[in-house]
Each structure stands twice: as C-alpha cells, then as structure tokens.
Image 1 (cartoon, helix red, strand yellow):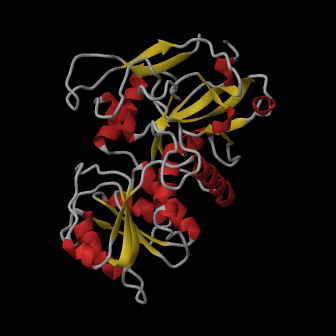
Image 2 (cartoon, one colour):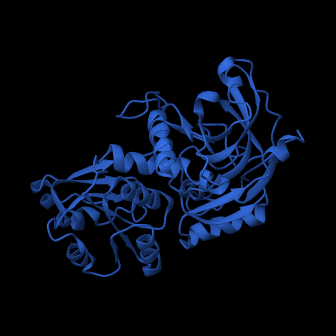
Image 3 (cartoon, rainbow, N blue to C red):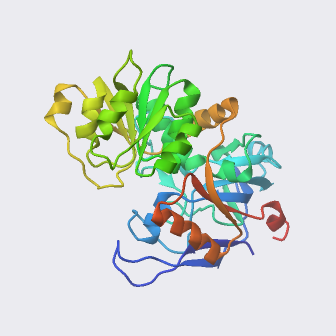
Length: 361
C-alpha cells in the first residue's frame, strides 16, 4: 500500500493548536477516464502547510495528504490516448484545479482548489503516489533536479501572476522592489524579474538574505527594520529613473504608506500575502498619486504552462534551502521548524523514492 503524511487531529483552537504529523496509508490508485498515476520523487512545503497545521487555513481537514508541490514519473495511466501519451514521462504537477485561463480569476464557482490538507481537494503530494487528470501535468524542464522541480509549482505560479500578470512590469529597465526576500515566492519573483531584464531590488530583516539575493541578480537591497529604508532604496535606484514601477509584496503592514513615496504616479503594489497583518491601510497620499494595490493569488492553468515554459527557456533554477528524504515524520517536522523560525532561504523539500516505491505497489 502507498503511504502519505497528513495531520492528526488533536484538541485546540485555531491559531493555538499545532496538529502533529502522522503517516497514513492510501488506497492503491486506479486511474480512470483521463487520469494518470504519478510516482512522486519530491514534494515541497509552502506557508499554507504551516497555516494548515495551525488550523488557520480555510477547509483544514484530516486524512488528506499534505503539500501541493510535486514532481515525479508517470507509471500507470487510464486507457485514453491522452492519458497513455504521458506514460514514462517526468512531470511537474499543476498545484490546483478550477481555473483554466480567465485572467480575472477561477471560472469554477467553488473557486481554486489547491492540493494538500483541505476539504476542497482530496489530493496531496507528500505521498508515494498521486492519481490525477493528465491535463494537470507539464513535462518537467530537463535542467531541474527533483528538488528544484518540486520547489517550482505553487511559488512559481504565484510569483508569475504577481509580477507578469498583475504589473506588466517584467521588461528591461523597469525598477521593481520585492519585499521579504528569502521566501519561495519572493525568490521566484526575483528570478523572473532578473531574467526579464528588470532592475530588481529586495528588502529583508536579514542582511545575509539580502547578500544572497544580490548573488542571484538583485541590484541591491535594504533592511526593512531600519527606519529610513525607503530613503536608502531611493539612493540605490538608477540616476535617470529615481522611482519604482512596481512593488511585489507578501508582507502587508505599512507597504502602501512607504511604497506610495517610492512608486511612480500610477505605480502598482501587487500583494500576494500579508504575513505582518491580515489588514493594511490605504492612504489618501496613495489615492492622489493614483497608486494601485492589486491582490494576487495563485494563477490559472494557462499561466502555469506559461511559467514552466519560461523556466525551461531561461534555464532558471528555483532556490532550495534544505531537503530531507523519505516520509519520515521527525525529519519533515524539522522543515516545518525552519519555516516557523523563518530561517530558510528558498524552498523546503522532501525527496521521495519515486519509481522504486511505485514498483512495490
């Protein structure tokens, strides 16, 4: 029988509880219609997985494998020609369903159903195998290792939409600030922006993370713990263009107040998260300068395909902070500790046995 890691129910209030991990067995997958079975070789954590363990994520449930990011090899398929064509392929999984191509948002009235640990989608990637519709697969870029490929789906898709779709600033000469560098989404925005020719600047409370970002192509960075970080950032901008075109933000807080002084008139703040607070103020100063704040979360199936193709074309490599191997609860718990402590720079990945495990089914 295949195995997976899920959360175990214990008593506790949302935000106070921390559900333990448990190893569970899954039914042997039987692909039907247009489905394929993927023997997983790596899966990656996202902040939503930590929120699920704290019961701070909508639809949190038990008995559903955790994680939405995965890469593996197709080992079995249903009988359709479309499904059969994937047999033996190394693939990367689209992390959710319900959103085909509409730029505005998911077409499905139920919204976007992300894999891993909730009632909205019964699948998850922290498992030996997963059976899913072949239309949710992309061929994995050959230059990526399993860990790098697993690090790509959710953060890559979120970053792609936040930068490429929401701002249209991914072009040479544009000045872009990426806040909170070190997290998976922020790092992918950095990589996408640099590859597109942007002047990318970063912020962090950790100088070491700023230095690493500069090593990945950032033009400079500031420590947001310093009161005058916005003034210091202005001094870093090119002489001929002393303003930002866009800010890609995952923190919230006072980013509108600070950002409106840094952005050009009509500049965009693309917000994909609010780790500082679930609310942020919108100031009249931003209104007078026509600053736009645009919410951005995940992305469509089309955007996922576009993002993977860009990674393939530009030979980009997602940053992996640390890996552990196998469906080992204690080892995986240490990755969650890294996330709780915000000590990671890049993605936290679990490598799996892949085809070897599938051959035992």
